[in-house]
Image (cartoon, rainbow, N blue to C red):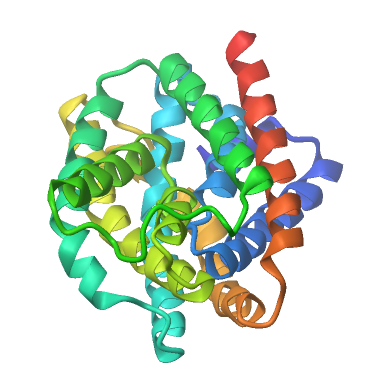
Length: 280
């Protein structure tokens, strides 16, 4: 795989590719700590591009990017959640409340994702990414539903939906859980910290699910187990782990409003790029 990538890149572009990969890891780590997301919204498109250069089969390419992204989120979300927990910004009671339903949603998401085509997975990713961009761009802090998070069956619906949708597109769930928590009157920093911890609940079973489903589908690729590629992890994960605490520090000192706008524009651009890829 690595030889194929090298053969497909002009020597003068190799340094640029390495720089872009390192930058992707750093940026993914910063936004993981800053927004409570797992960094998958950055990593999946980057990995898809890498696997395209490696001439991975198109039917497998997107699955491999999503599975590898989920594996990358494991250390990133753990470090991000730990950093937020030290600042008492993680609601562990909520995690106990919706944790089981999140895991159920993750399992369902892994099963569904492994049984749809790479093209359909890409379209799903582009559409959901577009919706995420919209909610980040138009979000108003005055929007509220209630003062406390529900403890009835609604909590299970929320947890299952977050786990399912996050696994389908290889993200840590912060893009979905943070707005939900804010609607139920969570302070922004506690919403971000709790979302980082939710990312761990999604990433671990999600990664296992993509490994198992890839093995079940008889996927055999160099440096990979199932739909998780370890070369992709080695390229990106160390930088995300190092930079995640930096994002946490920013999150507790910077205004979220402007950052939300910038982040939403960035996500929209990635959504548009993947949609164009799907059209082609």
